[in-house]
Image 1 (cartoon, helix red, strand yellow):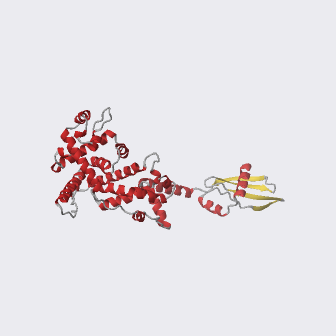
Image 2 (spheres, chains in turn orange, blue):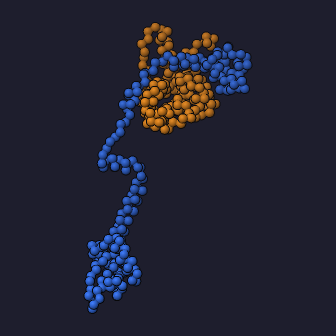
Length: 179
Length: 195
C-alpha cells in the first residue's frame, strides 16, 4: 500500500490478488447473496483504493482499513434499501435450489438455506459483527477497529446474533447431548 | 458476554469447548450469563455457521482486468466545454454568482464614466514680438480643472490660465492627442510647478 501511495500502480495488482476474494465474499454475504451487487461493490472498493491511496493511514492495518470502507459501503446500501418500498424482503428472496439427491444432503441443503435466510434477517449491526467474526474470522480487536465500537458492544452483538439464530433454527437443533 | 478476572470469555468458550468440557469454575462463570441450554444451542449454531461459511460456494470475485476496465479514463474535452465544466464544477451558490455579476456590471458602468489620466498637449509656436513661446494646454482628467500656460524657450512661464472643468466631449478629443507616459508625466510636473 505504501508503494501504491508513492505512485507505483503495479503494487495494486498484488493488493487485489490478496484481498479481492475476501472483500467479494464479505459483500456477497452482507448484501443478501446478491452476486452482481457484491461484484459491483468489490470493484468500486478497489477503484477507490487505486484512485485515493493517500487516504490510507499507514499506522493502520490495511485489511482493517479495507473492511472499514466495505462496511461503510454496506451501510449506505442498507440506507438506500430502507428508503425504497420493499418489494421483496431479503429473507424472502428465492435461494437457488442446488442439485441434491441423497436425503442426508437434502437435509443439509434445507438447513443451509434456513441458516442463510436467518443470517440475512439479522439486524444489520449484528450481521456485520457475526460475519466479520465467523466468516472472515477476524479477532474482536480487529472488528473493534473496523466498526469503531467498544469490544463490549461487539461481544454483545455477537451474543444477540447467536441467540437470534439459535431461536430461529431451533427446529434443526439436535439434542444437546449430541454436541 | 462477560469477562472475568481470569480473562475468560463466554464467546471463546463457545468456539472451543462444549459445556461438559468446561471445569466447574468455568461452568459457574458461563452460568452467570446464560443457561446451559442456551450455551448448548448457541454453540451448535456457531459451529454450524462456521461450517456453512467454510463450505458455502461463493461466486468468483471479479478479475483485476474487470476492475481496471471499469476505471474511468481521462476525459478530454476541449475549448468551451472544458472551461464550462470547470466553472460548473466550482459549485458556487447561484446567489453569489448573481451578486458577482451585478457588482461587475456596476463597476463596469462606473469605470466607463471615469477618465484616464490623459494629459494632452497641442504645442503651438506663438510669435510674440521677438520672443518664441510655446502654448501648453494641459488637461487633467475629466471633471478636473484644466490648465493652460505659455512658456518661453527656457520653459519659463509667461502667462497661464485656469479653465473650466473639462467636459466629456473634450475628454474624447484629448484622448486622440495624448502623448507618451514619460512626456505626459514631464508636462504634468511642469504644469504643477507653474501653479
